[in-house]
Amino acid sequence: MKAGKRMKGVVISKPIIYGNVSTELLTRKTDHTHKWTVFLRGPNGQDISYFIHKVEFKLHETFVNNNRAFKTPPYEVTETGWGEFEIITKIYFPPVSGEKPISLYHMLKLYPPDSQGQTWPKGKPVNNFFYDELIFSEPTEEFFEMLTKGANGPEIPLKVSGNQIFSLESEAAECKRLESSIAHVSGKYNEYKEKARAAEIEIAMLRRDIAALESAS
Image (cartoon, rainbow, N blue to C red; front, top):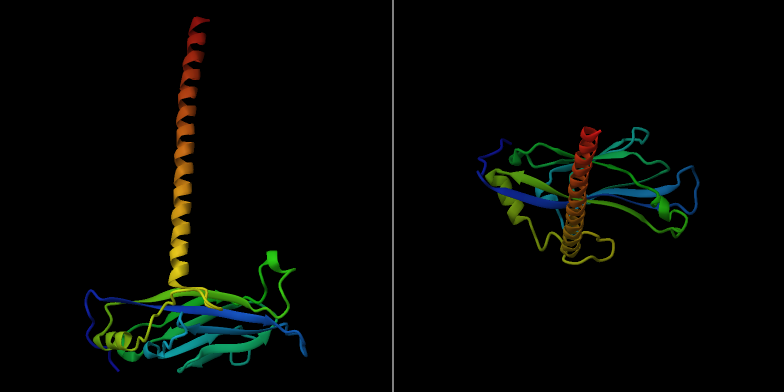
């Protein structure tokens, strides 16, 4: 189907979460050490299929049928294995959108951070989540209708809960941390700038004294 007329000056963004969750296998029949699930979903657990045509997950070439495609949710793949590798998540949009597919890349993470490896509880999941926003600039009229009519409820949760680590609350807290860090760096910059200026003045005075001694000798 041919894409229709685009809406000049209109920009719409849709938040998503992608990544993986993994759990160590406590009993093993093979050399596989972990069970994991790679996924794409809305940050509030909401349905995002109203603006997505298809999702493909490209796994390591050693997996049978390593290119898994889904036209309906849930958009996820569950497997077992022992190694970490890059996963490509490719998102296709409806033909009327006129949008090209978008590819997301992330490393499958099976193991906890090195600093916590010795104390990580057995059976505790390792979450490797990423937040992003799909930006649609000047969407077609048909796609604009999909994007606006399909939304149901808040797209980003207000507060952190359970496995949900992205929220408006955490976003505001992160902004405050960034503002504090910027202020700290700015303060240090001004401090060292003043020290450098004082050092330049001292060097200039020393050079003047040396020149005076040389001319007097």
